[in-house]
Image 1 (cartoon, rainbow, N blue to C red):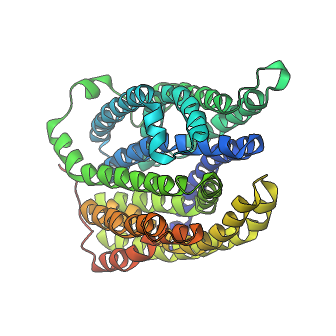
Image 2 (cartoon, helix red, strand yellow):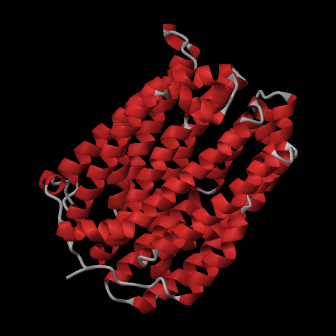
Image 3 (cartoon, helix red, strand yellow):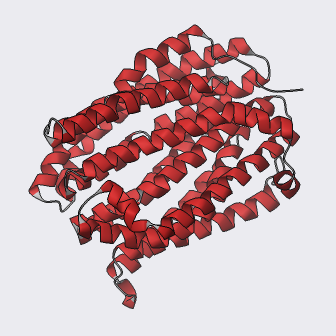
Length: 447
């Protein structure tokens, strides 16, 4: 294995995916900055309402990541027919989930918001946001599932094009509809939701065109959506099931964190919202590395080159460690500008000042964990172990302790936030030990 060849492959995958991650953060950041200019409670309502699509997106990521366990290895075997069948299975499950999420959100938006906060004003803003956003769910399930799965066949640039177009539309529509520019009505939080809906529709149109006319390697075939391959369905459930459960429970855990912070007041919620966006910004390269890890290692396992897979894993862990430290330094560098740039109350600004210091430390552990669990373990089909470590550390560790700290021991908000981040520290010894054991290295394809 030549060093130059390895890094050329890595950055050819990572840079488009990192840019895509940055664009996705830009969409969220645009809402945070623009709604933060309107009112602290408006921002809190939209942020907490956004937990529903956040959980859906993680469910979709679980489906795509689980499918990637199979598709990356089948891509190594150059078996496009099996990949198309797996894509059909994933799209059926994802789009059914999108419809279900829409129905539930439209039926009980107030009850959903009540989970996250007891502030009636914040609940009102969140309900208005959710009632419009619910119509995006069936659209985004198609787009996100397709784009995430074709990454495993090394088609990564199209995602950047799709989400860059979406970002432009979202920012323009946000400005017009939130603030009532160019004679448009001033809609506030509803304007942000409508802008998101327009952006999601544009994504689906571009993806449908690309899938039908441009992608010649792997096609969407309706026959594979209506007539599922039984053997591949079993394999999908075996390897994807734990990943879907993992991502869903992790997403619910993040939402539980938001609910805990939401019940500590709108100032804590607003500061927490900014910290979450900052984390996403600092992790764009590392998230790209985790995906590249799964793609490259999965492919060489499919090619039956296990020795190369082990070398790749070692290099990706080292590279992730370096990039995670850089992400941590980025948080420290932009901290003063975030605090001074947002029109928060003194209390919210004080919370954010402390939150960002804890976040900078958290990022180093998070980066290494995500590359090992999402990249290395999943590429070899070791999805159950990753699920147990990921969800166990969160639900039995940080969330339980965070809940007790907030509502039983009544610790300061800053202490509660620090405890909610401790799951990544808990995971490190379990994830690293599994990676070193080599038990994750399996070929899961069929002839």
